[in-house]
Length: 141
Image 1 (tube, rainbow, N blue to C red):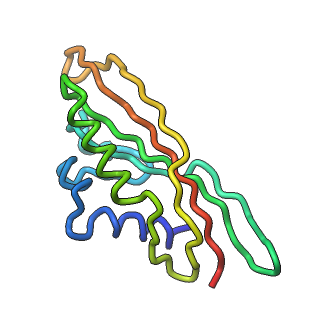
Image 2: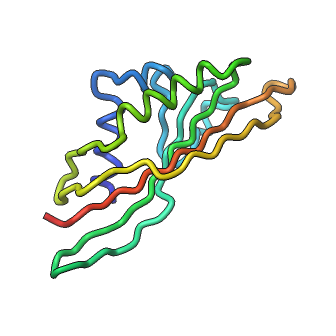
């Protein structure tokens, strides 16, 4: 699993990508760093939702769902829609180099959009939160 997460991080940060630029490099695994609170918007958190063994025809494999959570405090939707477009451009049908595995496919599966009132620095703020799920099929090399 670490090899897949490293491959995702490398794809985002290499260049850097337009997605990384959209959020000023604020892309985190699992959670926003507690030493950087309150959060600086926009940012992205990605994490493993599930991982299921897929052993077929004597080949060891795994079916994994990764979620990218996009956060924006911008008044309009332009910032988060740009983030979403750049996420899709980077990962839709992507072929990642995953050490010790062969990637079969990476496919966007789901998008859920919400708006939340949060308190940042004692002030109410509306935050857009878009959750984007990708299904990844890996096979051991």
